[in-house]
Amino acid sequence: MSEARDKWVDGLLGQMNIEQKIGQVLVFSFAGTHLTPDVVDLVKNHNLGGLRISQGFRGMNLMNDVKPGEEPDEAVMRSMHRPEGLNRDYAYMKPAAYCSMPQYARLLNSIRQLAMERPLGIPLHFTIDQEGSGSDDLLFDACLFPHPMGLAATGDPQTAYRTAVAIGKQARAVGANMIHSPVLDVNTNPRNPEIGTRAYGDNPEIVTKFALETLRGLQETRLIATGKHFPGRGESVHDAHWGLPAVELSREELYEKHLAPYRALIDAGLPAVMTAHCLYPALGVNDAPAGATAHVINELLRGEFGFQGVVTTDNMMMGGVLQKYELREAILQYILAGNDLVLLRDESPIRWRIMEYLRDAVGEGRLPEARLDEACGRILRMRWDMGLAQNGGLVDDTEAALSGRFDPDIRKEARDIAEKSVLLLRDEQNVLPLAKDKSVLVVEQVFPTHLASNTMDCHPGLLWDEVCRMTDKAGSVEIGNTPSESDIDRVRRRMHEADVIITTNYWYHKAASSITELVREMQQTGKPVIVVANTPYEFSAPADIQTVLTVFNPGSREHLRAAVGIIYGNLQATANCPVNVSPVDD
Image (cartoon, rainbow, N blue to C red; front, top):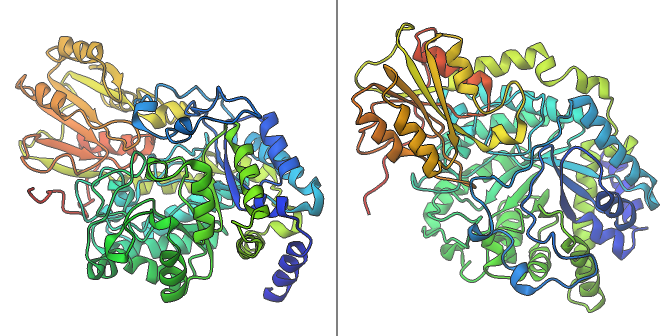
């Protein structure tokens, strides 16, 4: 196979022109469920190599008012992913048109067909991100699984393997080829605002053990795995989405804890790595993000660790990049540093400006063609391994029709793993199990996943749905993920009407913090308050919130059904907290 692969790669690479090579290193966003003229143009006429797919619409393109052909203002180019530029409650998300898995498979097939019809027929690959419900790259009919920390809470690495197989089967059924997982960050800082439950844990041995099983499951389904965020974001105290953080650890600590999972997974055949938008002074990374630093990629990752696969950037619209660079220059610097793929989650006219900028950089000698050849060679070898050389990756939509929630085995896996991963963090006053004759008020936040999917199995009101299966004495107050003042007033007006309050306390690093102060106010009523959260970290010291369950996927019916089963005593909680939740005092 290696000889056939090399022949295919060399044959294509030897015929590709500069425009085709530039197209191959770029991965743009395709969000939504219908084919738009811009995507047709990028694939058909500009040789785009990859698309990061999501069925949900996003309204986060701050460049929508820049017309094709216009030169965007540099200030705008530096502000695409800043908190002041976004409504962080995700109210900007537009409802997505429902699309079944077979329909989505046919949609992606139509894009692949465009790629196969262009000169040389260079195949296109599709990438997803799925770490549990903290990701918005969802498939409407897919079964959802826990965040990595939820898998570790089961204590059984086989759950990571089973989850990876289920995710891989669902993704491959519609035509996805690559996934931006597993997360290899070791979350050693409980106050980390970005990683949290996206990590398997705070112990490198646990992270490695579960990540290896995830890799094995993804390999089995031929979904290309991507370890992230190299060289490790678990100790960060700032979120790279909004600025350029620094990991202030010694070289010894980085090697002992944060780089250890990479070494193990590279030895096990990890095919792709995503670089971090972060500074690492102990590694000599003081002035530019690690992903833009050649010695991190070429000397450490490729040289010392022996990695031979594809290196991809994280999203180039993040504040960790734009604090340092203008976007187009950033992309050039990341390619020069050794990144093979550039991820840009954008759907604005800036995409054409980027391709033009890179073509000019080659013509001016700032981007050597040899660097593009090196990147394209690795990308094409990866696409061979994806199985794209035979028919461009076209899938049979009947396979998609039998996947996700229509596959009884996947559905059973989702239910079983959810039941094993829901964590009863504490019940200090022995409120549980709750008697079914108690009247209940359910205070429920609308989580971003609910908006992105909004199906019968993932929607606002999902927790209330499940409580109503147990009792007919349940009222509900639905509030925003970040409640407005009117939301809080509504809760205050109704918190006295029931015997017990069941409330969510969801946290999402791209949108909002938790509602702990409002929960404390509920407790002041003297009524039992049962908190359903999605992270254990908020409930550390002081332990004044007395009954807390952690579901590691608030967008999954299976997880909320398991939580309610534990609340009412129909299910025994078996998960254990896999991390230290108490931050070190400042």
